[in-house]
Length: 206
Ligand code: HEC
Image 1 (cartoon, helix red, strand yellow):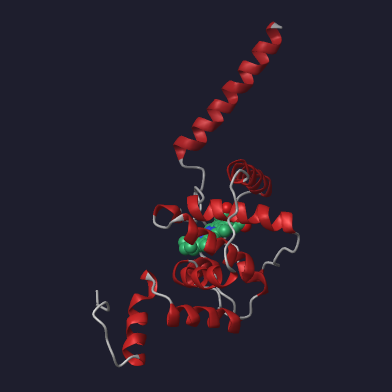
Image 2 (image 1 turned 90 degrees about the horizontal axis):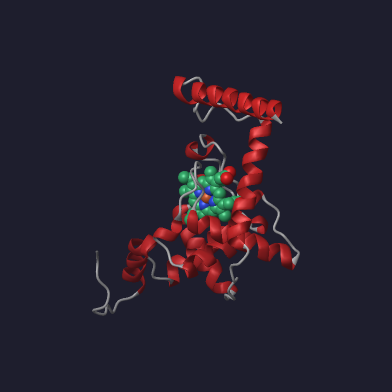
């Protein structure tokens, strides 16, 4: 018994010394260009997926009209996400190339076909979009967007896998022509000025 306790204490002491050395001396290279070991990467990924699943699985996936989430989702995605996650037909950006971990390129991911898998993925995507991911570049959009908008982005992202560049651009321009939205307010106003000769009082600049 005594030797077991001594062995464990000795082991913990060595771990503490190594840990203290690594954290205090700067030998650990925090650069984004210095990749993790494969084993570290696998461990982080495993922890990440379990952490997301533990919080996302209890979510209720709402029903939303396809036309609604496609246009709302596309407009938000185009305004806030493509610099990291890219869009169909778009080359990689300088920012995206410098990220570590890299942001997934959704339009290169195959869309899922099995209903349960789609639902599980929707919950996980929603949770990540709302809460962000610590120690990565993925921001928490829930601080500035309501759940409905985040679900629209979630469903939109799930559709990106089968979307062509033309379809993507159509959705963006559909929203610019119909919708009234904070991210393209200016374009929308400009559009109105072209299209309509009768201005009404509700239209104002900001
Ligand atoms: C500044 C860069 C950046 C921006 C902007 C950004 N993301 Fe991310 N996002 C990331 C990174 C990096 C990851 C991957 C993190 C990881 O590996 O764990 C990620 C992960 C995700 C995931 C999880 C994917 C998966 O496979 O689990 C989703 C969903 C997502 N982002 C959606 C969005 C949406 C929607 C937007 C826009 C509203 C957005 N992101 C904007 C960098 C970004």
